[in-house]
Amino acid sequence: MLPPRKVKFEAKKRERENLEFRTFLKCNADEKELDEQFAALHEELFENYDCNKCRNCCKMYHGSIPTAEIEKDALYLGISSENFIEQYLQGKDSEGNYQTKNSPCDFLQTDGSCKLGECKPENCKNYPYTNQPERLWSLYSVLDAVGVCPVAFEIYERLKQEYGFRK
Image 1 (cartoon, rainbow, N blue to C red):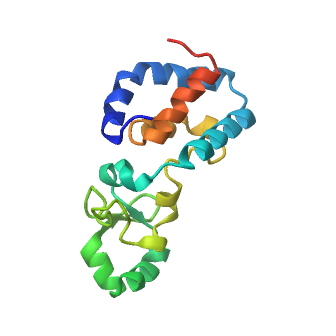
Image 2 (tube, one colour):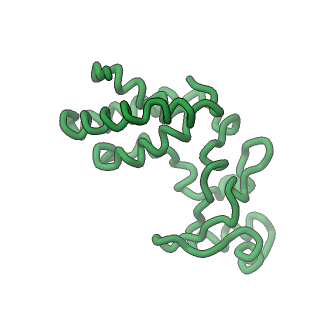
């Protein structure tokens, strides 16, 4: 598997090939089978992968905190909801979630863990979403993840092998 610092560079080198493979999948893959392939590779590769040693996702994106979780997160950190919003968050996105003020994410700690601990938002816990259903209909978001997450990169490369896809 690629080291986290090389993922963006290697994905950029394969950008055209990855787009062509996306088109190939759209035209040739069976939706259910592709979901099963993604899920199996996700499970296999994440089984022994320590995300705390990477955290490219936390470094490259703003965090997204659902409004409904503000009170719980603030309580976890021992501050008021108002203080939590003022200290860590800025405006809401199109889905109504607050965004962290900074990128890297304001909750990323130096050891790679999340300051929110078990209160970490589901969208963060589920990234890069490679085990979620309907991957065939969200391959552009998979391509985004391929440039960020070493595991997503490896999943995409292995799928190319499974499908015998050669540029």
